[in-house]
Image 1: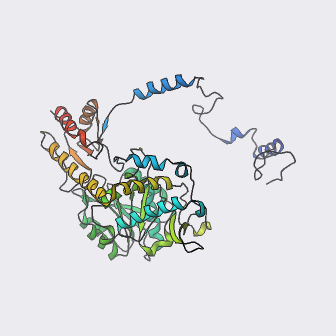
Image 2 (image 1 turned 135 degrees about the vertical axis):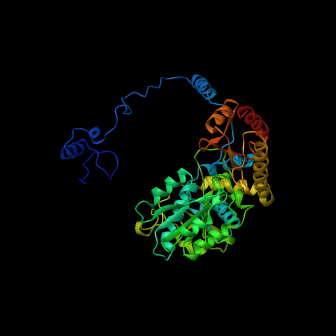
Image 3 (image 1 turned 45 degrees about the horizontal axis):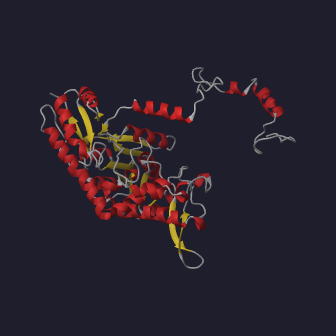
Length: 446
């Protein structure tokens, strides 16, 4: 890079003088920086934003009119994004300036309170999973799964490269996984489901000495509770593959402890606590066995003692490439999820152990009750598999898109899976509208 001339402005690391810019453009054989970019004319900036100047009152009025055009629907949607009631105390406390404006807690001497809260979040995940280590900074469930797959390549002694995931894995998760493992040498393959959960015979045929990673979900993407998790774990262990379980903190408070069924890593969406419906924003759960401690991606909060012997907290064993040599880094997780993890910890603490279990039990009871009411209707079958369900289940009808459209006209949103299958999700936030949903189904399928 050429040296900077006297009087130049801008970054000290990049030349910005007119002379230097002209020299670079001449070397590249172009007349302007714009020629270096191929931007379609339809989206290119023409110098005008097209936003007329308005006063505040007019802007507020226009926004209200715009929002009023939104459909007013009661959502019975799930498939990885779940909304539970978030206590007001979570909004109130997490909005305090010392939390809301805080960045990564690099200076432990002034962020002990935040670090302690994150340590408690990690401790909650450890208690729910039975595993020894949990971190506090994963983007979402999809990146948690992808990071777990990459971890398996680093920690397993097998020479294999196959990652096995369910054939029903949600598209968003599969796409993220494929992107993460691209270039790593890992190959993603699927195993089939039978009656809503893992087909053990088919999985046994698929797992071999080339398998490095086996992923199962409970609840599954359609809400079915996997009845044979220990068997899945045994199949993975028999070929020295890492067994990864996908779940969430509410479900984990009621279902089998992952460590007890042989899980090496647990991933999932921790944002079911502390976050309202956010349509994409998440918080990734990541917990694992202690032997993988130095391979955990993201951030860990550790507890120790300060110079005066008092308990103190600090970020520790950070394996991001921003903190250590790139060739030794385990991940490039950059965004700080600490505030979202704080909210999840606050929500869990406000519920307490009994309240968390009660919420999970409602997720089972409400799903069973709604599916039974729908199944009693002529032309409706629910659920479509012989499994217990958590929050959601599949529904069989003759014309799924048509039924969904009819429900939408009556104020309800459900998932359309294909021509003959819908999916319905019930939580504490929409449980009061289930009778109306059943009545709407009865009208539509008549």
